Every structure is written in C-alpha cells, then in structure tokens.
Length: 390
Image (cartoon, rainbow, N blue to C red):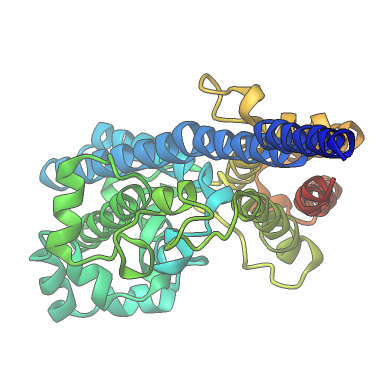
C-alpha cells in the first residue's frame, strides 16, 4: 500500500510540474499573433508619421502661403505677383494630389474632397457670379472664407476655381486679363481652400499647429471621428480598442490598401478614362494650367508612399506594406512593385498636355496601367486576411 501511495504521489507531482512548466511557457501561436499585431501597429505608425502627417502639413503650409500671395496680388496687380501666386498654387496642388491615396477619413467624411477638387469649373455659374454685384460685395467682405465656403457650390470652389483665374493654356495668365472682381473671388476661395486644408491636417494629426486648431474651432469645422475625442490618426493607432472604428490592425492595413485601390481606379477609370474613351471629353482635370499628367503622377506617387513606408526622404521600408507582403508572399510584392512603377512610367510617357491629347494611345496605356495597379492592390488587401490565418 505504501508503494502504491508513493507512486501515486510521484505521478501527481510530475503532472503538477508539467502544468507549471506549461503555464510558464508561452503559446507559440499566441506569440506569433502578438508579433504580427506589433508589426502591423508599427506599419501604421510609420504610415501616419511619415506619409499622412507630413503630406497634410505641407498642404496646409502651401495653401496658407497661397492666400498670402493672392492677397499680395490683389493689392498690387503685377505680372511677377501673378507668377508667384501660380508657383505657390502648383506647390499646394502637388501636396493635395500626393494625399489622394488616403482620401478615406476626413477628406470623405467631411466632404472636403469634392469641396476643393471638383471639375470642370462651371463657367456659366462663374459668369453669373461675376454679374452679381451683391455676391461680389459679400465675397469682398469674406475675411475668413466662410461666405465662399457656404455660398458657392463645389463647381466654383477649391483648386479649379483659382486655377481658372490664374492660368491660361498652361501659363500664368496675363495680369491685364484679371479684373478686380476676379481677384475678390479667388482671394475668398483661397481662404476657404486654406480652411479645408487646415481641417485635413487637424483632423488627422493631434499635434497640428495650435493656430490651425483655433481656426477650426472658430469656424466650427468638424475635426474628429464621429464627433468624438479622437483624430483620424488616433483612431487608427487605437485599432482593436473600444471607440476605434477599426476592430483590428488588419482592418487599418486594409483601409490603407483601399485608399490605394480607390485612387488608382479613379485615375484609370475616370481621370484618364472618361476623356480618353469619349465618355466625357470635358472631364479633364487641371485643364487651364495643363498639369493633368503631373496630377496623375502625383496620385500614383501617393500610392507608392503608402505602400513603401513613407514619403521620399522619410521612408522606412522595414516598416511598410511592401516588406510585410514581401515577407509573406514575395511574388505578390514583386507584382505590386512592378505595377506601381509601370503606372508611373506609363503616365510619364503620356503625350502632353492631356487636355489636347486625351485621345492619344499613350493615355490608353496609362489608363490600363492604373487599372491594373488598382487590381493588384486589391490582391494586396486580400493577402492581409490570409496572413492572419497562417
């Protein structure tokens, strides 16, 4: 009986040791899941800090400078002042187009995209505006741009309203062709444009300049997710936590991919496709400055920045969708890299200006390259769920 009892005690002790050892040793699967989550979180942080935030900061800066340039032009109508305003306009335009791979969030939720970037300009509405002394008087007193933002429709606002006044046939307009009422109009519109660019910056980055935040409060423009306490950046960084609109960091990566999918599709199907196929030959972006092809190229660069881990000069490929996909599906990563470079190359090879050569075969090749990029980025998005299931 003693021997049996002793053996039983030994068995029990062994079992207890096994349980204790097991409880101390981490579950390999859980360990892998935690590492995967940490990787995705690091990618999101890199994306925000080195793609979204600096792009919107530059857009805010240049849109603010554009207001200053146009106010200077209004006070001193000289050709050098027109040229300076045109140069700043193109810089602001560049940063806007570089943001179009992340139009999800504030740009769409607050209607900022159509508000500042609708085309073509409604020339009949513009002529009616110029023939309305009452409306011109209101715009003349529009110190903060709120009258323009509230009273003018999207087809008279934003970049293309300003472009219409400043450019003709790809060159800065002759100062003699710009009258006082036109200047009243574009100064007011530029202030509204600045307001919306500040709104984008403040809505994403909790560390945006205090002066920009103060203007948003003064104008009572929304800058948080669903009216809550989080910026769009904070919302993404809190993926998986209560209050975030992203249930997991995988969902956050999918949102980044969706932004790339959408802009590649828009450039291929609409921006290039509508004029090229004859569906709508008036649907030409930036026709007065004749910078359409530059717009398209910047849009594809925004996809590249989102995929590669940041803007040029701030990029960290180790913390990118590129490396994440490469580590799990190298063939798909190669496909994505090739699709991005092919879209950029085909756009660069388009016959310029697009407003005159939208029917050229080179436009068709660029259209197909952008559509292909959209399809490949959809494969990238689908890959995230597959990685989670491994």
